[in-house]
View 1: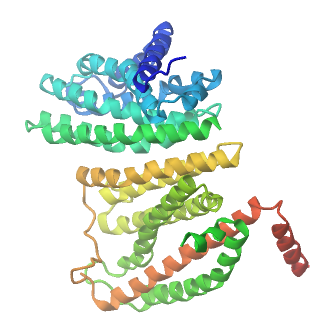
View 2: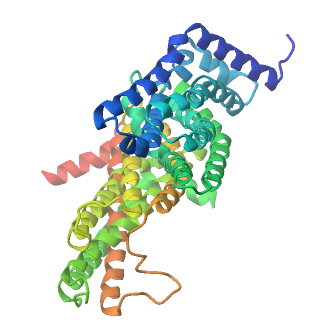
View 3: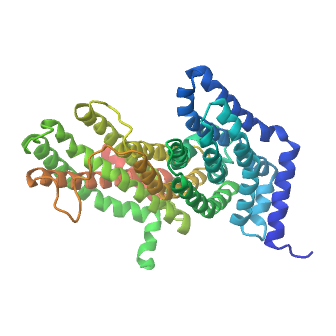
Length: 227
Length: 250
């Protein structure tokens, strides 16, 4: 048997995750529908006036994104844990954080990226002024990878618990706060006519930091959960 | 150093050592907290602007300080538990987290009580209040994860990872919340500048801070001893210990 390199293993893990997700599309689509439905509920609750909706639009979209990332988190490791795939990952010669990063990237492709594409629809429904759409999408683009990485840490920690849902929200939501603050601030500064570059760059920096450190935490958590 | 430290990875040795410290810490805590609070609450002069209501500072500031200090301590214990796989450090997480959470709650509560006469509201979305609230959530998260697993060892390790993830996030959260909003008054005690407080108020505050430090240490020590005893109950030394103490009690 010839030895597979780490890159080959990484691509195998990623292709497999993509294939599994594409064969069970509802798992991918449901969290996105959740965002759209939450966004739909707000105008019904607070009234359809553009003055109120436009003010809260960014917050609503981002909070919906945070909550939907919790909904989709089971998909990351749960089935792999149950059918023993996770143990194979731990035993594989490739470094576990490296493979974990691959799983995070696939998770982002299936949950974060669609949200970025969906954002204009939500912005339209919530009557966010058009000039802020670009910033909203930009914050989602740099923010959602961080969301996927943090979610992976939480999911790996709770994967061996049968029902980790409520616990997961308790663990993760406080850690999402900086993301929420900077994203909302970026859109807000576009709305008042100043540049949002500072906040977006800060978000990008945080994203890089998270993507660097989170795979290590995910790997440690998987090792704890599998044993 | 390792040769000297390593015996304390064993439950019994740590239990003995903490037992030696315990009476000193408790005694110092009693003296300092009593002196600090009696001086602060009854004898320190009233503030020219806030009158008597500023006196809550003698509880608020120390508890807020050590709510963060305890988190740092917990994170250090988590690092030791993960890197050197020392079980005593795992139990230390369980010992520190409830104490830290309580201090955080006390800081929040006294802050709210202080905020009512000063700012005219129980709760203000101010930076320090908010980050303190988030700190409380982080403590609760660590505790919830610690006790969520059937296997205590898994729970302790998972909680240790979460505590480390949290400690990297605490400065980021703190900084982001600051940036988001600030209305809280500036820091009262700064290391390098002249304190913005007259010595008649500052000295009881410092005594009170020292008292809370000893109190926190004493509580954690006691909780860690209990935890060690609980976890090592199957070992001869622990059984003997409990047997002897039970006989004393009867």
